[in-house]
Length: 224
Image 1 (cartoon, rainbow, N blue to C red):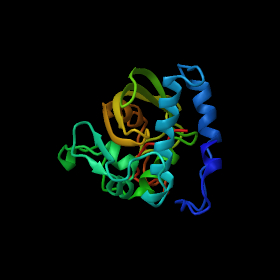
Image 2: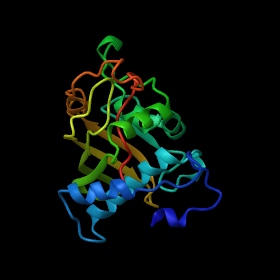
Image 3: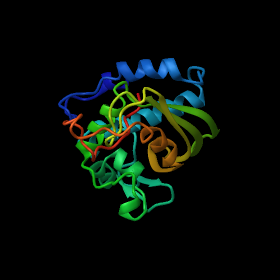
């Protein structure tokens, strides 16, 4: 419903607003919580999904409705925060999956381009990567909550064959909002090993048997 109210002047990364029919179906089939309409939990769930939609699909920060453009800061697992333009340039997947291990030990390298990281996520999770709120601990202006992210590993990832199994992880986050309920800061904590443990368990795919497989591909797909 939010997408129906977008201005004609908004610049979309793929030429038009995204559709979420497929991942919405995954969400309805796999959700563990069903929040009452208008509840704090539903409001937080919808707001975070919408913010992630903007970060993944809008080209210009000026078109974002759900963030405070001057104050926005994204912090993941205690790393240095990213301002709005930095997060937009890097992309949500690179921002969320970056880690500080030596490169030879990194199961994910955040020097992926915005496009390649998103394309790889669509390959690994053809039905999308759904997201839900598990629990909300506090309301505005500092919203604290626990979340769950999940998808079905049905496409190749980093030279590993799909398993057809559910891949999921849990995390906690705080979101600071201003008086207009626009996001000033997002602080996320989660264990990436929960995600990659499921993605890397598939049998290796030889280059000869899968000539189109991109061994540098990266995961993650936007929630509905």
